[in-house]
Amino acid sequence: MTSYAYRRYPYRRPAELDGAAAARRPVLIVGAGPVGLAAAIDLAQHGIPVVLVDDNDVVSVGSRAICWSKRSLEILDRLGLGARMIEKGVTWQVGRVYHGERELYRFDLQPEGGDKMPAFVNLQQYYVEEYLIDRAQSLGERIDLRFKQRLAAVELVADGVEATIETPDGTYRLAADWLIAADGARSAVRALLGLPFEGHTFEEKFLIVDVRIDADYPSDRRFWFEPTFDRGESVLIHRQPDNVFRIDFQLGWDADPEAERDPERAMARVRRVIGPDVRCEYEWSSVYTFRCARLARFVHGRVLFAGDSAHVVSPFGARGGNGGLQDSDNLCWKLAAIIRGEAPTALLESYERERGRGADENILNSSRTTTFMTPKSRAERLLRESVLALAPQFPFARALVNSGRLSRPCPLCGLPGFAADDGSVAGPMRPGMPCADGPLVDAAGRPGWLLETLGTDPVLLAFAGDDATAVRAVSAAGEAGIPRLRVVVVAERPLVVAGATVRVDRDGVVRARYGGAPGVSYLIRPDQHVLGRWPRPTAAALAAAWRACLRGEAA
Image 1 (tube, rainbow, N blue to C red):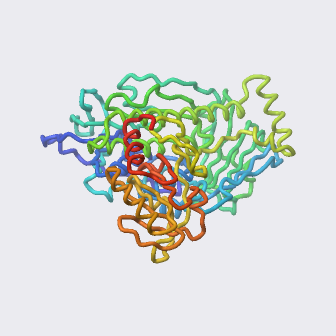
Image 2 (spheres, rainbow, N blue to C red):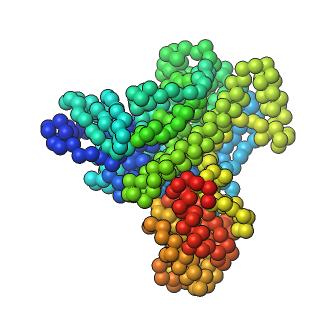
Image 3 (cartoon, one colour):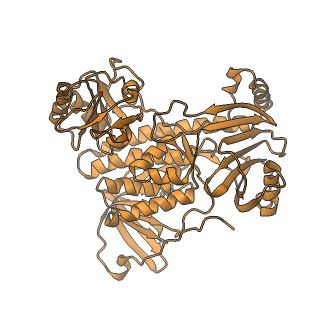
């Protein structure tokens, strides 16, 4: 008996089946998983109406993606879900790695502090989808959610797509300017367009078991190589809400999937991990193999691929769902700017480059993890045995132990579309970096955070020591002619500056992270990546950087 009541969403007969004029839609999204739903909400918040179709009517069955990184939590916070994710999820930042019964080392992913979001939150995918659907429905007519409606055919035309949608009551046609394919690893859109999915399939099989444990188990991520309690190569355990624990068992290439997913057999394995006397209840299990693969291109005319429809990796390192949310975050502000007529379609080439880099980075890390976890040659196994033997004593060996390099945001430094950086501003927030967070207070002394202040529009982030410095930044921003550009001023004390949002950095955390001497300013993209930074910006420099960004050119 599962502890979660899977929510179903009603099928509604579309008006198109009854002869209603089918209005052309700006965006059609296929797939109501986390990536598709996040894209729908993001576009709606940018004022772009969307229709989203999914062939199912229930949230994901089983925990599936569970581990949400700090960057994903920041993205979801901008979509209106951050507080709900933190309230329900299990927060963790410490991981432990064992060899047999011996602990090799432990790591702390966020020792510094000073961020709104934790390093990681564990939350089952069905909760995340439920929260995303609730948020989408709260946006009213801007998002048209259509469940039990399957994409049966798609045709690319010069200025958009023509889709055939199949429902329980028949089929209808739907025209859209753009189509976002977020329909997962078995993407129907990819299959209908005949696009090859190039990569490598790994033979090793893994068993996932979700169990409810009535015991005080720790929230730390724990990973065992060659555990003494199981005959497999590795075991990973994560805590989730509702006292549900996710346990991954490495089975070997010759395991029988049907036999291994049998609840009685799966629970026998679980008992060897937690002990015979702990109260435990079976919830769900699955056996999987995985691929590391990607499309050669994510942009095919007016069809845009995101998430698992564009690229897949192993689950170790939590790079699948987190990478997909970064896709959506990167894509949607650009697509909105194109639809509003503020940017050329060439801007999507930057989506291709930037998220292509992210996919390649994730595939590389995932492949390296798989090689370490499932050595295929004598040399690979000897290397692993040596590293595991040396790790308890030598830090260099610990750095080589690979139980899954955990998801991190992909820096975009050096790619076209970002301003050149001459190093005249100190600090790690170079053009192409995702923005770091930090605590701030408003004029009334109410606490807040930098990232929530930046929001989802382009921002000039200016550091000021006095009113005059802040006024110069506001003047440069006004003359730059960037649509919807907001000015956020960070100061050591309260200032009153017309045309700017002023926040006070009492603890100096934000100034330290951004090298925020008076006059230093950053141009921030709507996806909260640094576009450029200057000791003192001019309107011409801001305008040139934004123009180069929209054209995907070197600034």
